[in-house]
Image: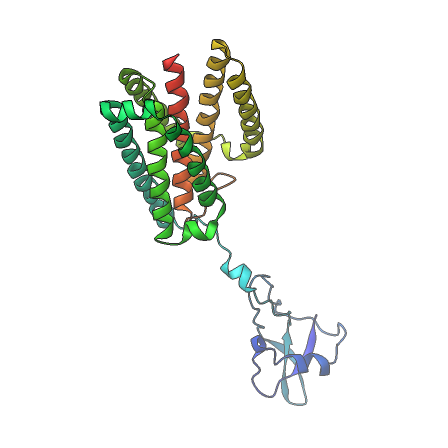
Length: 302
């Protein structure tokens, strides 16, 4: 809007003082051509009106051509909303935290499994007390539910570390109880195979241009089908049925591992984990690796 205003004193256009000028200004026709352009509105910050000298004079006072635009003040949500991995240092610190926590988890789990496998009294006690294995299952599931669904708890220090340590110990006890039914050679082969698969899939997740984070819905469907298939395999005692089940489980959690690594890395992928959720990211990758180990161990044992 082009208007001619008589300005007798400086006006702060960014504070809204120009409103009374708008109401009292007379909108002029196109009687003269302005030699200077108007300012352009960027739309994302508070606009400052820039004054340009007009060639005509009226009553001895300078006349200015002014463009007045509405003040657009960004809301607090817009200011506070930022990309989680916008800063490279934040991303690197987040990835470092996840790998440190994950390494400690895997080390604790390996030590506990080693005690169950190579300590003969413990091995015999677990075989004689099958209730110990079944008692660990609900405790592990409850802790997974708390860490996965209660966001405030897993972000609160040191409660998140305590719960994660408790979950890791219970998971190690559960895996140790399962491992007593296999030979030590089979467990070592399964551990080595899981390590190789994890390294290869992690490198693949970091290098590939395929975005596996878009497969959340598809993976949920496959997981539901695998769960139903597992229930059927418990009822029907068939060698080939169990073999196919273990192979499908290995494939499924391999894809989960790639997807969770890409969500941890973030950046060019569709979904990414918030930098404050390093406990949740470590939990996801840890569960993927442990599930891979269980299915690979079952394949080798068969």
